[in-house]
Amino acid sequence: MKADRVAKLYGDLTNKERAALYFRYICDRNELEMDRVESSVPWKNYCCIDFQYSDWRDSFFHMALVWALDCWRLRTRQWAAFALIHLLMQSGERDQAHEVMAEHKRLEARLLAMDRALEVTCAEHGLEAEAVRRLTGTPTFDPLFPELDPDSGYQAEVQLNLSRCLPVR
Image (cartoon, rainbow, N blue to C red):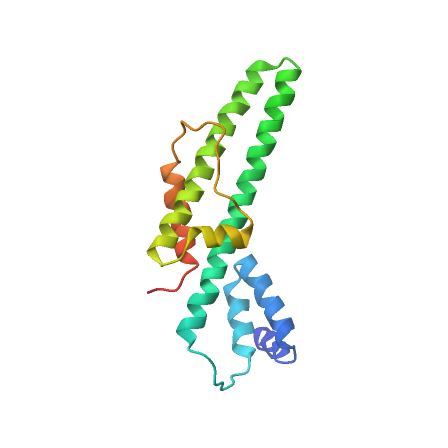
């Protein structure tokens, strides 16, 4: 009975309020409340551009933004590690600096994997990786250690995450 009263309250909300609640519940992974919110949204009939087109178009943007968010997060961690190496070397803590250097190299290998994952995913879907980079202000990663290979396990993980942003063919 209580659940029914909660669901009835959703019907009095605006679509913006429903969408905000849905966003909250999706972040909390609360499927029961997500279903309740969605079931309270009124159905309408529209005449619009083909849904398949708009779904792909919007999903490409979503994929690009997901990639950029992860990429910038990794770049920030890599820059922080580089700064810490410098500070540790200046203070004579060379052993710690070498440990942080290993982390820095791991982050660089992941950034290389991020770039490769973007290129592979874009190629699979007829997109230009450079267009994604322009949109997101994310240049191709130029490693400090050019001898590094991309982290292949991380690349596979990123490609899977990017593919989850896109509709099923």
